[in-house]
Length: 455
Ligand code: GDP
Ligand code: GDP
Image (tube, rainbow, N blue to C red; front, side, top):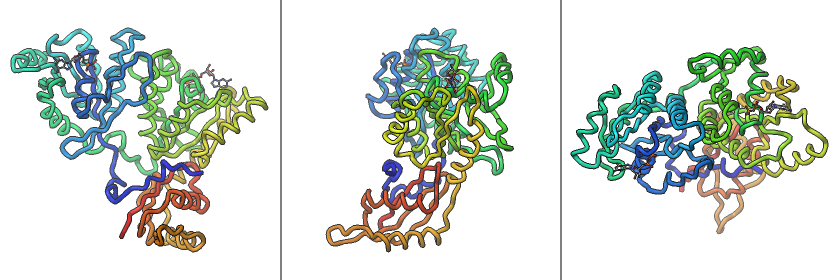
């Protein structure tokens, strides 16, 4: 059965959304208790958004859509992540580092009632090295008296402090105006791949599935990675790997290695890294552990890929540990939990021994070709004509919605728009999707079908 969530039955309103880029990303960084969560809630215009801070609990929600001045931005909230595992300073450094990686601009929040601390200055140095635009927010300026204290923050060397009261809303609108001026129209993570350049791959999966082992295997030499790690400067975010005679850009490999070294408390960062890597990639290799039961987290990661509209390859690692019993079990789990992505190629391999790792290239290539596919309008309408002739939409209240015309609005992934005289039943839309796959393949790519109803 096809995944219904991919068959988004839109109305008219999303017509223009089809080819828009990802909205720019604004990250909010600062010490604990400076008011980051309060500010995020204020911007989102709701109170409950980021209140559930249970230490050690993985929140999979790390970014939020916000609207200001008719534009959409993605807010990344680093508030409430301050689970004290590695000591405060290092957590804040982690936040800043993540913000650097994925933000188009950073809101750096300082508590104006306490003034800048040593930790603030440490983060300032990191932010400055990043060369990303930073907007300095002097929070807790609840009244005019506070403005004076806010002015002291000039000393941070980040330019003008913007006084706000996240709690009462004072100055927040002006702050957002400044943020919008600073942000690009489209997020830098969405920049188009140069034609003919290396394709971008995200290697994702929950901790310990073997991501760094596989990366090491693909890169070919563990020593390369070790010497990289020994450097004092930040690891390069991406790594170019030559496979099957062409180059591939594995995105956020620094994150993969880092994750492997971190222990507890890293879940939250891992979730964010996963999300970002998928957004930056064209194809995602989702690693699963063949010898452990498929988990909710596995399914969630796959869902992130399909919802982001990226090409997908499912990799079952640690196949060297496989035995007959587990194999039967796994088949059942796949039928149950992965039925909605039955179109994705699967590769069984062992990152440890290297067995079948050479099959990854073919799978990625297949998925990407599907992802790139464009079906001409003529072919599509011939297909739709035959489909309707063979199996028309069931009558509903004496009426029968007709498909007038179809076109592929875009590729990467393939998105189809059907112009109809009425709402098509979900079952019928699933049937169309199934027939599209039977006819055109689309192995390894999600497809979207939307409707435009012409009365
Ligand atoms: P975070 O740890 O940086 O996310 O900080 P929170 O948003 O949880 O806020 C920490 C504390 O500062 C809370 O008690 C807030 O109520 C308080 N706070 C946040 N913003 C303001 C503000 O603008 N004015 C005042 N007076 N207090 C604030
Ligand atoms: P990551 O957290 O996803 O990067 O996972 P790692 O690459 O660090 O691997 C986690 C553990 O699984 C390590 O102890 C690896 O040696 C082990 N491992 C990785 N791949 C395989 C494999 O194919 N077979 C077996 N038996 N163990 C593996």
